[in-house]
Length: 273
Image 1 (tube, rainbow, N blue to C red):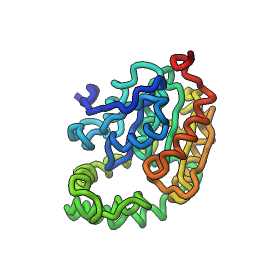
Image 2: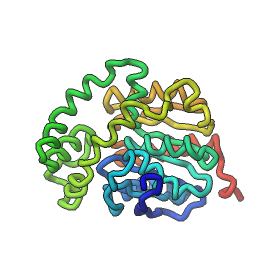
Image 3: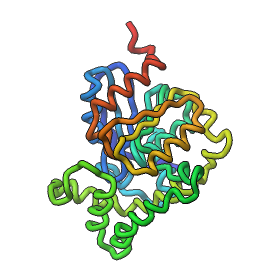
Image 4: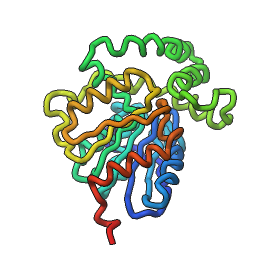
C-alpha cells in the first residue's frame, strides 16, 4: 500500500550534540553529506538517508508519488527536533517534511531547491531555457539509453564535478540506476499539487529558514529562491560565491559557515552546558 513507507537505508556521521537530518540530491546518496559534517568540526551528528532508487535503499515500488514516498520515508527518521537540510530534489523533500512536522524542525535549510513551480509562479516563462537544455537527456532516456541520459543529466547539474569518464564505475552505475526516476519528480516540482505556493500555504513554517544557492548556478534556481523567500515567514537567502549547483559538496566549508550563522537564531538546548 502506498500509505506505508518503504524502508530506506540511513547512516550517521559525527557524534556532536546538535542533531541534523539531511536529504541528498538526485543521483547522489547519503554519503555525500560526509564533507559537510567534517566541516562542522565535531559540533553535530548528521543523519542522512538514501532516497528510494538511490544508494543502498531499495528501488521505488512505483506506488503513489515518488516525492510523497521519500517524504514518508524521511519522516520515519524525524523523531525529535533537528536541523533539517535538503539539496536540490532533496530540498523539495525536506520542505514537505517540514510542512508535515514543523514542531520537529528547529531550522530548515534548502540548498538549490528545484521547486520550479515557485519560479513559474513569478514568471510563467521561467522554465523555457531549462526545457531546451533538458531535451537531449530526455531523448536519451526515451531511447532506452540510461547511461547516456545519466551522463547528460550529470553534465547539466554538476558544474565543476569530475567528468563522466573520470568517475568510478560504481558511481556511474549508481547514477544510471537512479536516472530512471527523474521524470517521476516532475509533477511535484512543476505543478505544486499540494498548493504550498498558494497564499498561506507555507505559513506554518515559522522556524528559521535558509535558502542557499551558488553564484554560478542556473538562473531558474535564483528565481525559485526568490519565489520561496516571498512565501516563507522566517527566511533568509544567501549566496556562496564561485559555487554551482553542487555547492554542499564542492564548498562544504562555506556551507558550514552559513549554517552556523543560521543556528545562532535557534540554539540547541541540548548542546548548552
